[in-house]
Image (cartoon, rainbow, N blue to C red):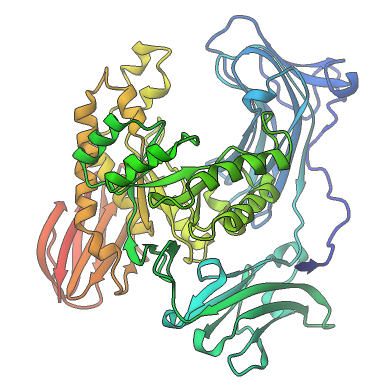
Length: 630
């Protein structure tokens, strides 16, 4: 239970002319930039008021955004909403909020769209809740638009943008899997997620207090020594704890007023079970008592013939099929080939018409999980693919339902909202994002996203990353000529992205996607494109002992922008990876902290270590993977 104080009753509207009723002397909509094909029309809004209307009869290449610009405050979050209606014959309807710095440089954005079953001529609300703005954010553009070449008519009304005003205490988390720790874990960390900026508070204005059940039978209360604007934490030896409620209370120092309180149910166990799947204190996956580094691919449906191709090609140990109706026979086929399945129960939510209610969605999830929860090929449940924070109550509900239905397998989500990962902590056990470089080939986002999401998760939750290996032409098949001209990723480019996410902190790799390589076989033979992915999988398998080692790993900081590096240790062996993530030359000076000898330069540019340091200059997206000894 979490209790907090109400900071503000009504949030002020930040958009100009949000009712879309005011026109200037020239008949233009005040405050809004409306390009060609967008116009204000009375009678087309909600309740026959004025709305913004997009109407396109035949221009199949048309694309423009209607919107306005608003000043934003670094560190604050915003709620953006609009009512939208689609009468399009072709295309999609969207809302977006994108923020930029003082020079107008794009920093990031959030996006919402009407779903397929909402393109029905009825009004539907779209909602965006932005992450907290970065320190260099100055303005945000709120845009209403249709996808490129949309044909037909779409309408918007009642747009709104307001500051999110959260309670000072947001949530409480434990860094052990499902709030359970064994004596062998050594220490456990409890964190309160704070939001002091919205209340105009600083760490010196508050007292952060933790109470916990001790192994001596007493309840102990301690003030957190580590308090920041966004968190308060304590580390405790597991041997000093007993199972029970750990309580956090946040006080205002000046008058001892309680600003928020929350309880967390903690469980101490002597040792972990040897059966089932769990996540250990080092973010490693453990399957039936053995550590497991996921190396897999996204699939659509699953056939026996393609499973044989998959297993013959590379040392994959798992797959993530989008098909949520896999039979136990299909699971049997996977088990026979040594493959684990991340089973999809995504997209089963009340807002989809085929379900309509939470009860109907819950029943569908229950049916799927009960069909496979006892199967030895089951690895985890894939429960959210890019659903935004506006649906958080339903996402948390799904997490709790799946945990109750099957306590022996973790959950996993993959989203693009990497800057908001902290908000998702209560909604899954494992996390991931899909930082595909896109048409502009922004390779560096792979590293940047993973570093951010690890920090957002307090470096305490596993990150199983989606890495692009497909040709973007797979999503342009309606125009084969256009699809034939898209860039085909080289093996070097795939390898660079893979190691980008690994040096940033990823704990597993799922290449995207097996079915897209199949779909593009007419352009690049499947044997060739899949062969590149298999080469990468074999390389990762060869380093598995480092990824699963008990020895400490180290992510290097203070490197040039766009460069990442990490060192793993396994006994007396060391694996070092340095990656230039950008399409630009980069000079790197890396102090290893001790003297090492190079055992082998395995991949990329060969390196030497002199007096414990490495000096190297990389060309575009260069990298080095080497093994060392001391």
